[in-house]
Length: 153
Image (cartoon, rainbow, N blue to C red; front, side):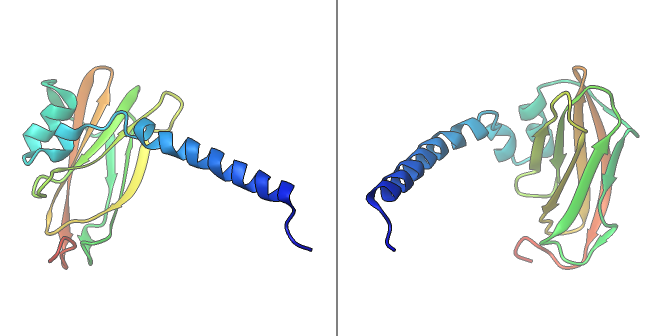
C-alpha cells in the first residue's frame, strides 16, 4: 500500500514547521556570543573583553580535571567544577593559543557549576579558568603537558 495524499501533506507540513523553528534557533543560541573575547589574541585582552576590568583573585574552590600529560593534543578532556556560591559563568582560556578563549559557559541558578569538554592544545601550556560569581572573578591555573600537538603539530 502506497502513501496517501493526506499522509504526504502531513509529512510536508511537519517538515516545514521543523525547518521554520530551526531557522530561528541559531540567533537565539548565539545571543550571548562574545565575539571580541573569542577573537582577542592575548589572554588579558580576552578576559577584559569578556568580563571588563573586574579584579581577579586566585581560588582553590575551582577544580580543573585534566590529564597531567596529554598523549594527543587533538583531544584533551577537561572538566571544570567550582564550589563558589552563586557562580554565573565559567570560562576556559589557553594563553598560548592563537585565540586564548576556548569556551565560556553561563551557569543558571539551578545548574550544578560543572562543565566538561574536549579541546585542542598545540603544546604544553597552562589552562586558565575564570569563574564569575557575585560580581567578582576567581581564577585557577593548571598546566597540561602535550606530547603530540593537536593544532597542526
